[in-house]
Image 1 (cartoon, rainbow, N blue to C red):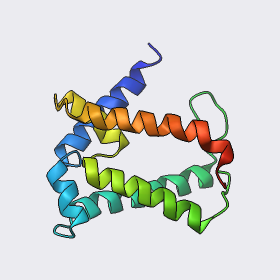
Image 2: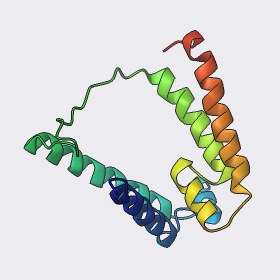
Image 3: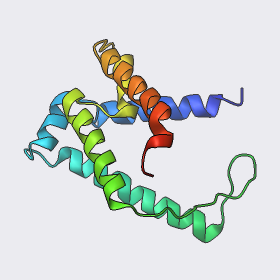
Length: 137
């Protein structure tokens, strides 16, 4: 019963992704070809909302569901690291027309071809785990 709130949040996420057309391969291709503002509007709204929520969490010292304080630890900004990682992510996103969250929403829409992209994402995650210690972090 404790997991019900997370299941409901996942269902809400799926509905929002579907209704906003963020799972549409065509919308994603429009974004990468600079033909439409639609996806940039969605991403910008998410960034703005995330910024406001983070500010409120810090200001009011909010706690998680178990009562633990929510902490934000600063990370070192390494430009090459984020440039390479972002490029790989962006190429995969442009090629498959899906990023990790909406991939699973596509399964809910019975777009079974997305299983190839999910398999590739899982394989990439596994390979990263294998070679992580040998990478320049």
